[in-house]
Amino acid sequence: MGAVGKYLRFTRPFTLLPPLLGVISGAVTAWGSAHNPHILAGLPRQWTPGILWTILLGSACAALLNAASNTLNQIYDLQNDKLNKPSRALCTGAISIRNAGWFTVVIYLVAVLPTWLVVVFPAVSVSDKFFAPLSMHQCFFIYIAGMLLTLVYSMPQLGRTKANTFGANITIAIPRGCLLKVAGWSMVASVFHVEPWFIGSIFMLFLLGAATTKDFSDMKGDEAAGCRTLPIVYGVGKAAKMISPFFILPWLLIPLGAYLPDPFNRSRTILTGNTTLLTILGVVLALLKNPEDLAKVENHPSWTHMYLMMMFAQVGFAVAYLV
Picture (cartoon, rainbow, N blue to C red):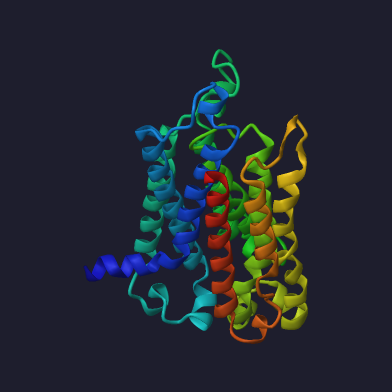
């Protein structure tokens, strides 16, 4: 159990909750939307064992993919962590780099390969040999895209965008914001609609700014390792002001989407959940605490605040589509 606990802590378990919850929320949102395959077929919505199994599988894979991203990042962040987080397993020698590498590879494989089993009703004719796999295995290809972006974020061989002032936030926001929600949606319905991408874009825009919350307390190690984060380049105060709009404006897109017509089907709105609940959700999230004053202390409160906001939003979306 000591070895299991050591490797479990290595994955940073708290950070696995938002992707797990995000995929479940995305799937529930798809189930409650106008794009539910049962609705499109003229049938009442229903929870089938197949849908429930798929959501369970997909959410577990999302958590594992995030775990693999965390362990990979710690391997390439060893120089940073020796200054910022010296108690981590690689810094203390509790886990060797070699073992960490193999552990990461295994987690990536276990996280991605099972998603090939997630099959949705094809959005194009299955007679088209080129598009049929993409259409039927949407979830798998979304997970592959997310995996590749986590590699680009951490690995110098692929660019290591973590060291780039704006590239770091972009390569966090796309997989952990946009693709996460779309991946959850793909477990129930086709992603070839505006709605899942609109929802994913809201979370992506939030993370474009909110991802910086982890950088305020890591400045010493990041600077030593050559990572040009926003607080290092612009200073703590200015960086906090730069990310503040991302804690407010993205959420205002929720009530906007609840009232704007779908550009491809003007008989319904972009967001097809409960209009009142979606409006309330967007306003409440936009009114939550601004991170500017949190940046004056160590990063951990604002980092936790960011994760709690994400999880609140994910639960809120699920509720708005179930009612």
